[in-house]
Amino acid sequence: MSRPLLTVCRKEIVENSRDRRAILSILFIGPILVPALWAFMINVSASRTFLGGDEPVSVPTVGQELAPNLIDFLNRRGIEASDELGSVDEAIQAVADGTHDVALIIEPDFAENFRAGGDARVTVVFDQSRATTLADTRRVQAALESYAQQLSALRLQARGISPLVLRPITIDQYDVSTAASRSVLILGVLSYLLVVSTMMGGFYLAIDSTAGERERGSLEPLLTAPATRAELMLGKLAATVFYMLLSLALTVTGFAIAIRFAPLEALGMSSGFNVVMAAKIVLIVAPIAPLGAALMVLIASFTRTYKEAQTYLGLTLLVPTLPLIVASVLSVRPSLELMLIPSLSQHLLITQIISAEPLNGVHVLLSVFCTLAASAVLAVLATRLYSSEKLLG
Amino acid sequence: MIEVKGIAKRFGAVEALKEVSFVARDGRITGLLGPNGAGKSTCLRVICNVLRPDSGAATVDSIDVVADPLNIRRRLGVLPHSAGLYPQLTARENIRYFGQLHGVARETLEPRIDSLIERLELNEIADRRAKGFSQGERTKVALARALVHEPSHLLLDEPSNGLDVIATRSLRGWLNELRLDGKCIVLSSHIMQEVTALCDDIVIMAHGRVVAEGTAEDLKHRFGQASLEDIFVETVGHP
Image (cartoon, chains in turn orange, purple):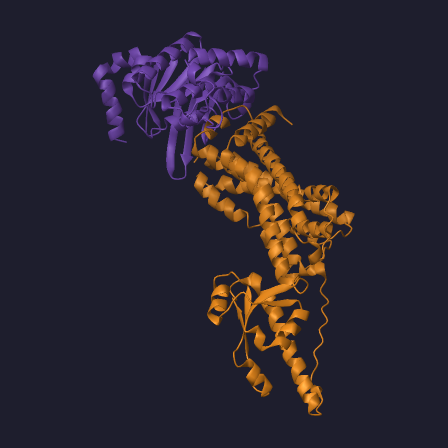
């Protein structure tokens, strides 16, 4: 590397390290906040879709003395009726203000109507707007329904009629999805977060070294220094890549810790997330750093002011999501052609690493090579733009 | 020595420079005098090869600026119109960065920075970050930055811009010292008194052309003190 390039790179690294916003985003948002949110999200989604049905749940029930058999039945299904709420109003209020997820009301004339073989009613109180409570609500509803079905079967049998009369069609379900394919979204989010976090590491530096430099008028003196524009541009890119890699390494470390708090087994993923996996992920995502750096510097070079650059680069952060959206819609499997697409190839490879599937060496090489090639093209474009006289405005 | 030979530069529909020629000699201060928009900054930018001329040529020590830009930049110290500093770096670090970019060896660089800080009276702010510097402090640091590689030629675009009376006076002092060192200094200004007080040779520019040039004495002799201002005003009023 040439001397001016190193000088520029070193100065940008020092300067950026003193920018409080940049450091906050590299040290806090990427490695701490993002993984914590991710783990929280998985916990919520796992408790909503995959868990439940095992652990006993306590449901406040009004009027349980009216239907001891029903209460028994529910109990055997892990639904324990509690008597902490005395009245219907109380039960509705408790669910409405969120102190209870779901409540059951057995109507006062339940026993009477039941004996008469008529319209015995129970009411399930729940809050549809609170997604986390829906799993429990569904459990209660399912249990009630199966109790009703059991009763109707018994009553029909007592009258000498086959219960199948009421069920002309039996529906069996056969789900061919795998745990990994069900978690495409969660994994997609993981790889997206890694890519974005990597790019965020160089966000402020990319702006500062282009639009910022122009706005505060330090660009013209810089251009009078005996360095070629390519040396200046590549020095800035190198510093941006440095911070992006730093951010990537810290973020993966953050995820490695957060993943201990995420119920990955429930999602059918390997929970043994170890150092080797983390290192592999860093290496797979690393080529995104030069690509992101070149892309951001290129776009920031078009802008006139710091604020304008911030707006455009914010939108640029969405670019790597596009292939991921396609992937989640089409639920694609890794293939040779898909390795040509930066961001998508990283996503597919990360998914394989986390599901503890073996990696295809050719896939890895192709992903790295294509991403680096795209970076080189963008870097050349950025250098061209930096050589333009319009730069000074 | 800096020679400008018939340079022209156009930005879209605007002809910023039309056939500008002049010579700036070593050991003298040459002033480009002209109203705003006369083409002074563009002219200086062409000499330091930030802009390429559409036609004509500029040479520094007889070396064409377009042909060998890196060599030219080593000989030039430039104080551009917008002398922005890096706000997160200290004054000393700002100066050091340019010394390093110019490839000044470490052993020479540090003592040289110290002596520049001494000479420009920057001691108090030398190790403070440039974030809160006043315009005068910024200009001083930018001047030190332009001098750190000991260039033989100095281009200053409106150097007294934003400086108070005292700072302007010390600036004149430093420029006189640099002239005595034998440097070739070109500065631009739109303030006539400043140019007549400081410059040995004066080039009056308006609307992208040179309208008059000569030594200060020459011009005073030719036009008389009052009519120097007259030419200035006349060329501005009637393009």
